[in-house]
Image (cartoon, rainbow, N blue to C red; front, side, top):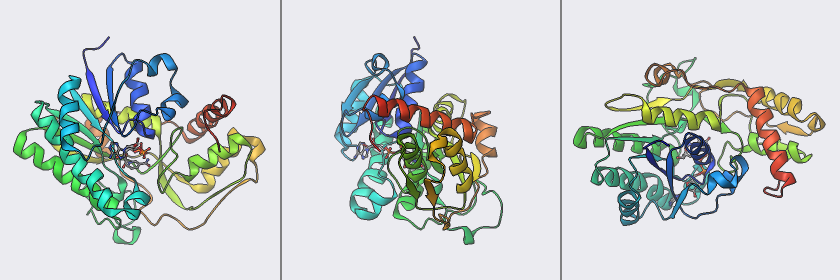
Length: 321
Ligand SMILES: NC(=O)c1ccc[n+]([C@@H]2O[C@H](COP(=O)([O-])OP(=O)(O)OC[C@H]3O[C@@H](n4cnc5c(N)ncnc54)[C@H](O)[C@@H]3O)[C@@H](O)[C@H]2O)c1
């Protein structure tokens, strides 16, 4: 059993469930802070015995007292901050989006400062970048201009600024990672979740239309979680946000991988030609230089594992298409 104790905010979400799975498997004590204690995404990828080892605290990240009290009372040694509302939710309610995604991040850094933490890892997003026409061709470097066109992206840019200020003013070292299109069991909300929804439909034998296409960087949720954990452990002083390179794919490659994993879905999964409009590839070399070799599950393996997990979950009645 490790002496580490990690507080994971937003851990009932997709990436959070995978972070918790990896931490529990490594014998690390985990406290989860989220809006409820409904661990259905964890149930897709963890056994009940492992879930029982997690401590759940129900609270709102936008409530400074709740966050401070939880960090202090938990005895956590570090925090992985993932709690956020995604693009559609921020668009539907910008005020709430700012409270959760910006005030929530201030609350987490404040609570970390009061508890004497020296390191924090948080999720930024590739949405800090603007549309593809703003950039030269080729993979986008970490220091390319941040020109977000969504409030969500603006909020994530603010989070990176908040992290920088807490380094300069309080010496809290932080790493923010910018995932792009995350897929895998548990990915069921957000603008880019439809490839995973297509995998669930394929596992259930149902048709599905994916609402976008084109090329994009795709990352398996389990890999993103491993990168977050690596960012917590690597020797590092400062405040940096890194692009998380993954596998650049075309949506046709994704559909082909789904068809290989679930041959009965041939011809049942379609997609729009219209791309997301963001740069296609992120240069992940700076992240690798600091974090070491990050795990990148090949597309076929990630899709096959996702479909297999969905099949088991459908059989057990844990999930519905
Ligand atoms: N999934 C992606 O493709 C992607 C891409 C880039 C960045 N990110 C970022 O990674 C992080 C995790 O993403 P995810 O895909 O797991 O998201 P998710 O939507 O699956 O999970 C987010 C979690 O945050 C919790 N949450 C929301 N509001 C809260 C509040 N007020 N207080 C406490 N908890 C709250 C939700 O209940 C949920 O469990 C987020 O910060 C997200 O912005 C995700």
